[in-house]
Length: 303
Ligand SMILES: Nc1ncnc2c1ncn2[C@@H]1O[C@H](COP(=O)(O)OP(=O)(O)OP(=O)(O)O)[C@@H](O)[C@H]1O
Ligand SMILES: [Mg+2]
Image (cartoon, rainbow, N blue to C red):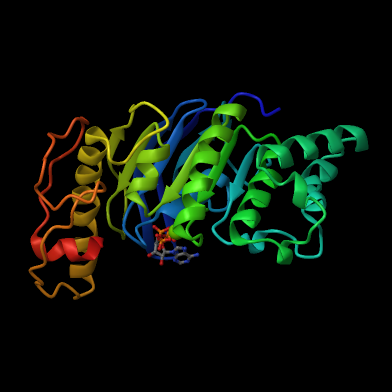
């Protein structure tokens, strides 16, 4: 069984790729066992920040710590689930994929088999253990990836748009499953998504990022709505609108920087309950928001 999650700390982190400053002065403290979602416009630096926590990229300034340890490279204690299921070894069965990490760590055969069975059952893949990745659906591949990461009993699970390639229904099922698995393992989860609704369904806190270059943490929204969550609930809908405006301002900034702001005068989209914009408006309930308004033309980018 996965031990309790580790806290993660991002302190004054700057990340560069050559002369390009991707992230500047990012600061974020994530509690042990917390579920944090990173939201931001495409290209702002979400994956870059996640990769710094994973140890795949090294900050030029500042530091990332996990527990009491400074992150200096990848480690099995920080498991990564990628968007693409190609992360699975195609020549190994699901069972062999999940057993791979424990085998590399020298876990004995009997203990390995118990762990593999446990995590395959946890993600609902026991019946497909002897299939190869090519014989699985997209959702099943993502379950297999998650089981493979969990088999290493990580204290932190880093997920980069893991459900981004799934259809809406499968995605919904996976979100519910992940919520359950997170509670069952106690791991800390940092989850990157473009999907505001997904963040509201899953997160303890939702962290928005500013548009890059030199992206940083913009706002942090506590999300303590009772679980399982319902996006049609008024408090969820209010948070949805807040986040849409927050991210929308950054998308608009990105589009302007790219010379793509055409001044379209589109109307605001409705809320997740399907009501038209402005209907049944609920006052925002989450603190720490700068209240940036989004021009009508900019909202187009949010759909
Ligand atoms: N290895 C790299 N070399 C050079 N630039 C990079 C590299 N990785 C990322 N970048 C740049 O850093 C910025 C942030 O990229 P990143 O992939 O973190 O964005 P993102 O927020 O994850 O975007 P998306 O939502 O589209 O996945 C982008 O401008 C990107 O071009
Ligand atoms: Mg990314």
